Image 1: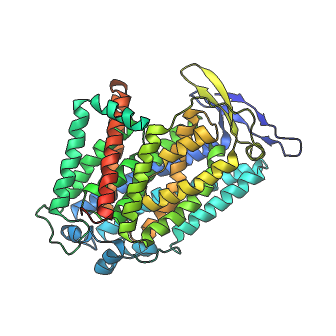
Image 2: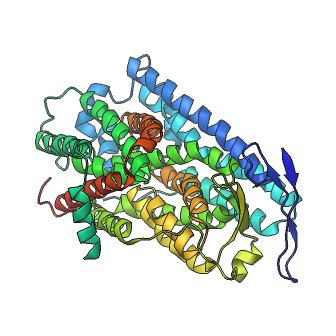
Image 3: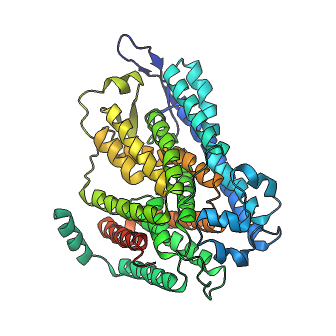
Length: 161
Length: 328
């Protein structure tokens, strides 16, 4: 691995932020935070996909009884989501956590992990931006985390059709 | 008109295999629409066993995964219009599945693109903040609007995508005479290693405020229709902001992992995610993408791209017909 230090020099009134670039095996020039982000994304993505496949196999085998029997699904998947929720009693928000003993809702472990891995990637690079004194990107990353956490919180619900 | 004549000329050169795929999809769609009226929940269930539609979805997603790679488009942009048009699943669940399909693909591609220095984190972060915030708004609007309205809007949007695909030009290395003050302040610039020539290529961007404004629209559309947004990300990053084409394509793919995350949560939390649709779709698209990459070198990209345009035209027509309740 060849290290190449580079400083991104802005106009005179802007802070100079050290952008140390490194060359991983491919010959590319990549910043430290980008490599850290990639590492977390790689691990989280693999775990999420594995969880998705394993829990779906459990669902298909019927080892855990689903809330909505698979044979009944064709009655519901053509409905608007509001009607489906009313007809099946399926939960919204994080209510699926209380139904992890059900084969269909067990799948939400993988779905939630894939939907949440980006938040952890951002949390991992914020300390690097802080150490570099890159206040603009600290702010951008913190706001992004807040946006994603708000989306994940279940506080935002859509009105009816 | 020039775009239409180019499309007609390309259609004449479409290989037989491409027509077979189009025919399979259309036939499945007609059979599905006839046997299981999606827009009418009171209709009697069809005679097919419960597992038939998820199995067909797996196969079609696999084909879409191949076509998406060969056609140079994201899986999400094909998935939502085609599955919502030709399968019995309600549009709410198809959009939820489409977002997760696009998200899974972006998450899988992201680490490699970042490590190779093709996707750029500093370029992505400001754009992603705007797009992911607006994707939440789009998702909430999409789930609140009547289905017919969303169908019509989806059909119109997909038609717009077709026009964009026919008209948009790309530039390997756009000329950026001077970086604008915002991108300079944010230190958005980079060096990427062009493996084919062994060169390190410096790049910078301009028109950053206009680019951020474009991501407002992109985010809303991504959230509302679950389409993914590579079709819009790339022209904005490449032609408007001036990032090199490879950086634009890679950063666009990585961006989807953030944009679609926020919208996906809205669909998950509002109950619009059915694992029986989501998992076969993700597995099918990802396996198809792997196969697509392997056969990429042996195909004619122009012909496949024409097939993608034909598929999107059919799907947009179907969405409009459903939206106007002409053919449910």
